[in-house]
Image (cartoon, rainbow, N blue to C red; front, side, top):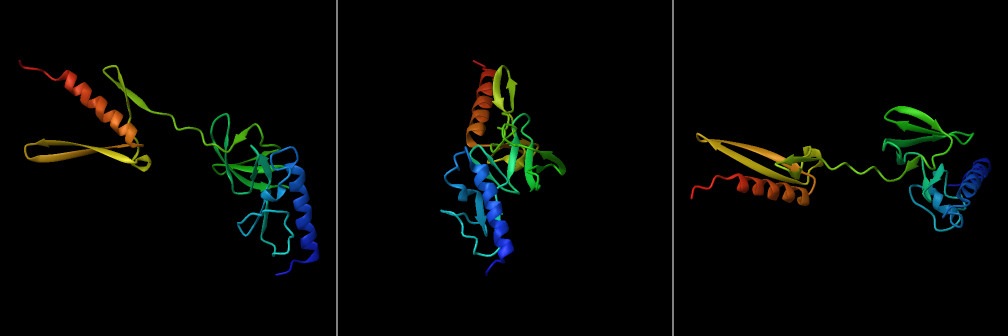
Length: 184
């Protein structure tokens, strides 16, 4: 599918903006990495003869191109931010949980890396053990059964990974063994 001359000219103008944006970054000699066509990338300068489904980066962050729809994180508080739109004057609209904000530059204020999830723990007789998590975050479960008068009750405790579950189980067993009354 051929693109109209006016549309082709606009694509080259958009690519020119991308080339300028890539200056002084790791993409300076590879600005085509900041352009997508039908979801795929390029391994050289695009010729813009493949229709009009081109996406151009709206910013460069940490030497990676940022496109509309990308998810970034605020450095100071870890808030999730979705890149929403690039305005003609170079300003970016960023969506924070359906609350848009306008930014002139994202460098220094945003990162690609989500904040680390804080490790939650509790103390049992001076021993720090990992807390169970929501089922949605779980990879492994520990079941505790209670049988009284023929009635079986089971509680499941979820943990983010096997290491946390093992730490919890080993620590709990050690505490129970140490607290056990020895009749000898």
